[in-house]
Image 1 (cartoon, rainbow, N blue to C red):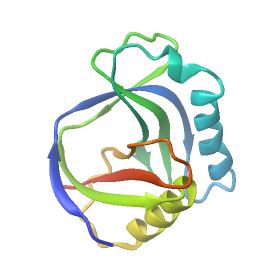
Image 2: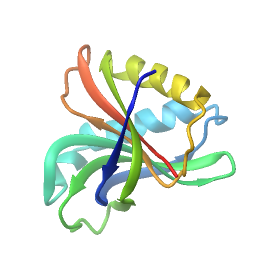
Image 3: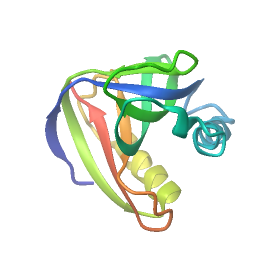
Length: 146
């Protein structure tokens, strides 16, 4: 898989979060549930100070075989007390541009990324959904590097 190395500024994400891991048999259900809460649950519409309409899927707080998943949006200032607030740290990232069926393209890409020999920092990896076309999605996946 091809990628480019980019430097990003810090981003603040507001959304809904849960803890899971690659070995969790409920991982898919947990992550799908977060996206359902965000959209069908009306949370997306309630997020204040969005920088843009791009949805963010953030993986943070890595420990052992678990991590926190947050589905939300980048904001200029967090003002939703009842929602999770997470920081994507400034730094160097491997950026993968993915196109295709939203769920399949992301799942297949992560499968490949986990096999790659990247010098990962595990400080915050994320997907940025650039459109909402389920069949022909444009998604950038960012993997934090050391």
